Length: 247
Picture 1: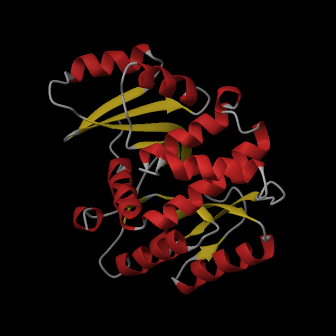
Picture 2: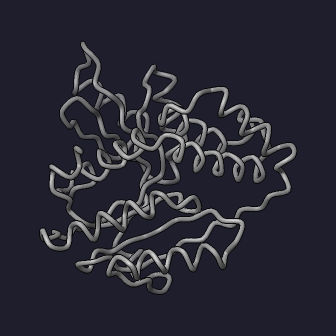
């Protein structure tokens, strides 16, 4: 495994999800709507929908909420169109930032994202200005259970097509290619694994350290993006200190 702090960012993301469940469910609901519109409401015939349902379950979204979101997307809300737009830029301290959005109003979202960059000491850039620093990978995080053998779990993951495997404290981190993510996840689920994180991620090739003066500005930027309804995912290459991750 490479030595950057993707695990730190994963732990921070999970903490944010636990602290803002309603906001997370709203964002996942949009992803469900987009998946339904693209491939229909039957997950058996819609691989993307299966992926989003798995992500929803990993975030502890109740089954009733998932079902309701799918029905709404295929019914009265089927006329709502969300555009997927990605913004790139730099946060305070030169941190590379990628912001993925789903929006029904491009002008509003572009203005809001630019405002957050500017307000927190960053700057929004052009497409491609930082994305080359990241690799798109499938990320699956499973909790380590009593009796699990690390070597056996690694062989299982690799046999199912995973590209990398790591053990961190009481969790397993399984990385896949973006193209093979769905197949690996479904095979592992069939073997009885359940995930606390199940989604496509952008992992930085290298991280940058953030000094004490810059950290509050960066934290504020990440929080503001988290709270924006149109923002689905935020990726960055900052190496966050451990005490910030576990708050």
